[in-house]
Every structure is written in C-alpha cells, then in structure tokens.
Image (cartoon, rainbow over all chains, first blue to last red; front, top):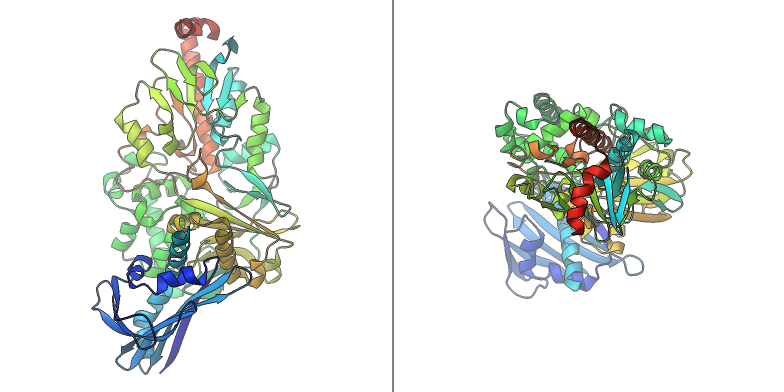
Length: 143
Length: 481
C-alpha cells in the first residue's frame, strides 16, 4: 500500500489559454494522446463532473474531475477496486512569457503497486510524447 | 581543356552537380587526372550535409561531425587538406533518462538491468549476424534479401519478441542513425547499413566507433579547403542544375545562368533530390521511383554552448541517451582545449518531426529542458544556442541519409550508383562502405571519379585523341543553331 507519483514537465511558450484549449475539450484527448480512443465529458469540466474515456483494447472507464481551476489545474481520477488512478495537469508561469506544463499520474490505495505496474508506468512512459503533442497542438492552434 | 564558347556556355570534360563532400572529392580527383571540371551547386555554400557555425564563440558542426576507425577515406582527405582531428570526450559516466528516471552507465548500451541488457544484447547479436550475410553495398545479393526487404526493422524486432526497453533503445538508435522510426525502415537497408559499417559496435560506439573523433577546425573546413583548391571559377554556387540532356554523346547541363557541354556528368546530390533535375531522355520509371522511394530521414541537431564543460566536473562524459526527448542522444562536442562547453543533441524520427514544426524559441526551450533533465539546471542557461533542421534546407531536404521503407530496397538499390549513359552517380548513398557518413561521401566521390576517368580514357582511345573542343564542336554548333 502506498502512493506512486510520476510527473513530466516541459517549459514552453504556449500560454495557459492555449494549453487549456487542449486539456478541457474532450475530442482533443484522442488527438493528443495515442492511448486515448475517445473521451466524453458529462458536462462542463468542474469539480465533481464525470466523464468516460476509452483506451484501445480496454472497456470505457468512468472518471471524475477532482480539481479544475481554469487556466491552471486540471485533474481527474479513476476509481479502481481498492485503488485510485489520478491524472493531473498543471500550468504555471516560469519566467517572462515562459510556462511550465506538467502532466502527472498518481496511483494510490491498497493495490497501488499492482496498478502502478499494470497501468501507471505505461501512462508515465507516454508523457514525453503526449505533453509535446499537446504543446505542439496548442501552439499550432494559435498560429 | 576549358573552352568558353559563348556567354554563359562552357565546354568542359566533366560537370559535377553538387558541391558536397562527394562532389568536391570527385572534382578534385578528376582534376588530378588532368581533366577539366566544373562544379555547380544549388546552395550558396559548399559542403552539402556538412556545415559549420560559430555559437557563443565556439565552433560547431551542424551536419556530419564525427569520424572513426576504418573511415579511412575521410580521414585521409582531412589529413591531405590539413584539417586536424581530436578524440571525442568520453571520460566519466554516461547518462540515461529512461521512463522518467536518470541513471548513469558506462559503455555503449545503457544499463537497464540484467534482463533488459541481455535482451538488447540478443537483438544486437542477431542483427550483427544477419548483417554479415549482406555483402556491403550489395543488399540484393543477400540470401534472404526478399524476406528482409519485406519487413521493417520495427516489425522484425516485434517478431523476435524484443522487450519494450530493447525496442525503445533501438528506436533511439534508429532516430539518430537514419532519422526515422524502426517501423519506417526496411530491415534489409538497416542490415546493409550495419554491414557497410562493419557491425553495430563500429556504427554506434563513440571510442573506437563512428563517433571516435571530430575535427578541430570542423568537418565543413574539409569541404571548404577542397573547394578552395578547385578555385572559385570552378565551383559555381547558387546554380541549381535544372536539366541534363544526354541525348547524344555530349551532355548539356543547364543552370539558371550557366550552361555546360561536357563529356560526362557526375550527379552528387542526395538521392531524394535527384528528381529535381530534369534528365533527358528519361532514366526510366525505376530511376524515378528511386528518387521518390528513398526519402531523406528527419534528423536535427541542437547545440548549447556554455562557458565551460561543467558536466565534466560532475564526472560525466556528456554522452547520454534519453527517451524523453527532444534530443535522444547527446555528446560532448566541446573544442579540443575545453575553452567552451558544447552539448550536442540529436533529434530525429517522430520526435524530430514534432520538434521541427516549432517556433525557434519553443525549440530552444524544449531542447534545453531535455539537456537540463540530464545534466542539471545549469544546462538550461547556456551562453548561446543554435539548432539545425536539415529538413528545412532547400537543397538537402533531410538527413543524415536516405531511409527507404520496406519493399523499397530490393527493386531500386542496384540503380543507386549504376552509370546511365553519360551520367555517373556520387553522394554518400551510393557508397559501398560507410554509406550515410562523410566517409561514404568521400568514397563515392572517389569511385565516381574513377569511373569517369576510365570512361573518358576509353573514349579517348576510341576517338584517337580527339580534344574536348573538337569532340564538343558538333553539339555546340547544334545548340547555337
């Protein structure tokens, strides 16, 4: 039992608004992340709003937004048997016109070790590509 | 002999198209053999895939950089023109950034644990063994050529149950070596490439391998000095060859403002650039397909220059592999005297494609973020930074070499260097050793020059010492009329 956390940060010129336009719009998830087949929100992203996401080869999973602070933080969580898997997103100012964009995964609960091995590390391994794709798309949209 | 026949029209023995290392070496050898030569180059500089710049007071090679054992022709050429070499810095630990964690290791293969290392060794040994069955530069003669060309390096690795870590490690090697993903590259091409290098260790190693040394004055200086030997009146910059007409026994080469009549033509451009030159009569569908189906890879380089090589103080070599990118492999490219610290990062394949799209400041931030994850926050604040995106070079259009996909080697590889009437081919892709490297470029230029010298000598015997001017007179008269 314990909590496993992994984060990946990129420094970028993409603004929080540009980044937010990729995080908070469900159809962009499948574009930016090869591990997402589709995603749906049951309402505007806000604390407590639910949604569903499907990965290739897996059934759709329900998730709940746990911390949504527009243009800053965007977290949601999957409830698993004896565990939780949270995906976190954070954008912060880092010097003039630069921002730090962080994607993270947090696995907690009695079976966290198993979920980390089965899912968490695979999600973490994909972060460099996903974060870069998100930022490229954010910048391209602005161009 | 050179014969200025009229304004902008010159009769000569040989026209070389392309002033990269290969074309320049070909021209140099032809001139040594007493032939009259002109070189036309589309870009406003010589060097092709070698180029240099000064960043933060330090010299950097933006293209071909390293040489190593058995790359004898490039080394000999550099020695002849007085460009010195020095060993690539390898003291200390190498770094790997893998799945979000940074670790130190020694040697070529990153330490991913005993099982992963054993699996990587198994795949490397198998590839080495298979490559020994490919005659260097003659992949069509490999006993399983058809079978190997029908699959990609990636599909072969999956078929041999390479572990995920092994796959990613070889994907990094693929991005840095060919500028592509393993799934984009013919297995037969990969094996031929390994064969031409003498094995995977010579291909990938720093000390004792292809990254063993670099040049004090830079690799571009070799090209610049060969071009200077030839003379400004012989190397015509900003003159893209528009067409080569070899309908008769004399070739007619056109650039926007210069025209040449020549006994022979050497085309020394990247294979995927061949199709930009209109050749009459057509070389046929297979030659056209070769230019289309042997695309250049996507490989860019990022240089960060610091006041000193600070990583050496930390016991680090500056060499690293990373699955986070954008740079997948780094080297210490500091000058010989260590007066500056220079980190060089290779960015290739899918990461290169993403990165090449970015605005300049964003590329800088991302590249330096990657360096900082490896070498610490100090790496984020260089004196200066520069990157080179080879895909954006109008007359190069990719690199470091061709990356033919599955099914595209066997039908076309024979045509790479095969002379077609008056046209001979150079460029590193046409080499039978170290293709894709500067050494391959030099070898190919030497081989093409030898072909032309032999051809012209035979023609001279046949025509009983007809001079160039006499030989070209009918063609000239036809053009004037």
